Length: 508
Image: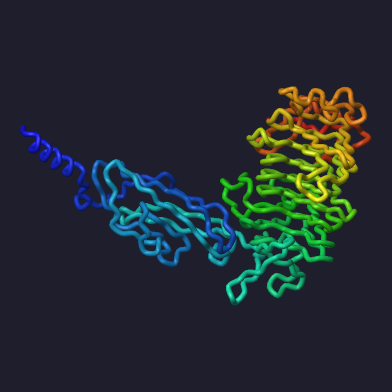
């Protein structure tokens, strides 16, 4: 065969084989298979769009088929919407004559945006179903979403298209002041447990005012949002010990994405910022998770920020970043932060009893505890660290050195670790002669230190920092620093255990 004839023949053969005869299909006979028989779109707030969920549809037959209709049972009025193999259909609700090759599959992507009024009033579920074909060939996949009502707080939008802002130094950010006489929400400075709150932008407590959070309150922040406590303002978080895993009396701050895949994602929102001059701030039984900085504290007005029975998890930068602050912390647990779980920087005054500071962030740059008396480039560059005392604490994590002291001359640097478990492996020997890390010989700064001992936490990946009696932290505390109840309200025995949790047998 001559070369040009051979090429012509091959071209015809390829074009015939590659041609998809969509018109040579048979009608579906109701034998489709599905990756799921029910799609749970988890929990969404009223009028807030859900994540996108996926359904895979299989044609296991030997025939290329046409599915006459793929539609939502509630039709165009449905609060669900779909795309079918990239097609939008009639407003994402109805699709006709959808081809599906033999032994092939297609994807359907589903989303919803629904109002609490659309849900069943008894269980707050909004439901529908995807229907494939009809009559004797009808097949269904159920759709279920829990709709949660909420109080929405956000900056005003003005007639000229601009949005309300807050002054931060010489800059402005999208935000607003909480109003105790708001015509829609009433007293916005009182966060009750009746409905969750969803905040867009930064909500600020005005000067001279106090924001109060009742036990069981739930506060959700949208991306780039947070809470600011202004000069001469304060917050009181009045959580209480809970009796179930639902933390029904805890005050919880987290992002506004409620789907399970977002439950441990850092950096979903900004921070709770106790600004310079905020006063008399009190936190008790608070859980702060998935922010950029859990707590940013710049409080040098002379009053003490008290933080008790509080958990801070999964912060993109810091769990607590304190600058020239004054903090008294009891029964605190902080874990997983990109830079530091606790950073006591630029001087200040700090005292922590029975706290667990851990960091399992996957980076050699992270630490569980950082203490310093300076910020490079600041004016002045150094400030007095008048006290940094850690009693009956655990400082641990996945990195070799989980405690760093950064000291500069020109300002005080007073620190003390009593009856603490510290992870400081010094594998490179760079700190061997450093006078600040002489754990065994420096009795003025270190007393009864357990060095590089695994505390055997229950399950770090789930933020469960409980210990049992096999832990080296068991009964190693000093009763002089005793906090009688642990973070969940259990009575401590004598001598007390280290850390925030009283030891109990692990569940089997």
